[in-house]
Image (cartoon, rainbow, N blue to C red; front, side, top):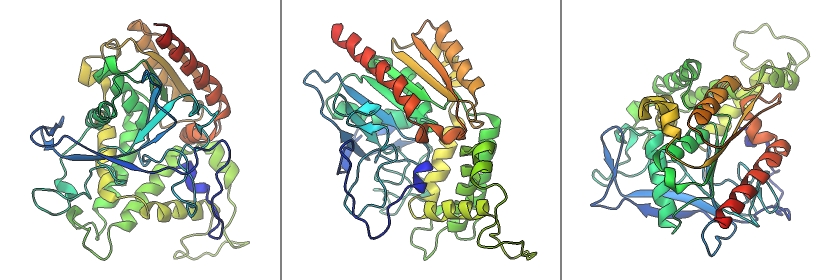
Amino acid sequence: MATDDVELRDTELVQPAADSVGFVTRQLATLFQPPSPLRLAGGGELGPVTVAYETYGELSPQKDNAIFVCHALTGDAHVAGWHSANDRKPGWWEEFVGPGKGLDTNRYFVICANCLGGCQGTTGPQSINPTSGERYGLNFPFMTVGDVVEVHAALVRHLGIEKLLSVVGGSLGGMQVLEWAARFPEMINSAVCMASAAKLTAQGIAFNAVGRRAIITDPNFHGGQYYDKAVGPNVGLALARMVAHITYLSDVSIEQKFSRRLQGADKLSYDMMHQIEFQVESYLHYQGKRFIERFDANSYLYLTRAMDYFDLAETYGSTEQALSRTNARFLVTSYTSDWLFPTAQSKELVRALIAARRHVTFIELASEYGHDAFLIEFEWLEKLVRPFLEQTLHSVRKG
């Protein structure tokens, strides 16, 4: 999303700032070893499951300061810092995670793991199926947000942590936060849900459907078994990204950034084969091009479908019932220009929390950046999250 716009020049070497977590290393954990596989909501089983994760800060002796960050649709475990001096960009939430920042690594032990079904180290469609010796492709079992959280909860226990200080996430990450509260109510002390909802709107499902259609109709999709081919469904995946990226922006932000300015010309070409005439077209093509360099088309299919299926009320009887299972404190934020997850949905979530007699704080933040705002604007977010976490930690240690 927004972090695609922030890169270093090829000749520059990274010199982490004082408020960065610095150079970090991706770690791997193997969970759900036979004979105890992960039992999936769709009826399938999976095991062993490899989970890629990163940690920042130090776990307290009491193990009471751990925060789990849930990444959004195309994110990964690399939430902050740099892997090497040759990196072109830092972790996707670099401005929010680090010493003295919103998620202060001087005070908290921050964990972020790649989702099940992802393509950045955690078991997913491009992983090798131990049964066949070939990549799963579309033989990877159907998975849900609940399955993602099941794996992440197992990782937290693997790290020796019984209860998290907080789970934090936006968008699909926010859905995971809500699933944590419903599925593992005793494992969390607080939850921060940003730009998300208890279910995706029909409009959101529609945009996901268009993206998936672009991928599966690409001639190079090969029924999902494209890994040994010279070219995969790059055109379809790029189109999916272009469509999705439009939903992350607002009409105001896209107008301010591009308006009707031309790209590399001072007049229209009147040529139907000239695909990039406007700056906004160039920007979207760039987003698509960069996306195919780091993401797997099958992972996109699985994760968007998991997002479509997520519905707290359907799973637990009602949103109120789902959220009444935990004593965790909640912080819910929405953004005025977010039309992918509009404020009305956040208010529905807050009403359910109030009905469930949960402790909840809600604020709608004014922003022109649309859905991407939680990845871009940190000043107000930090002012909200910092005291919320401090109060939670105080109450935990006070007992």
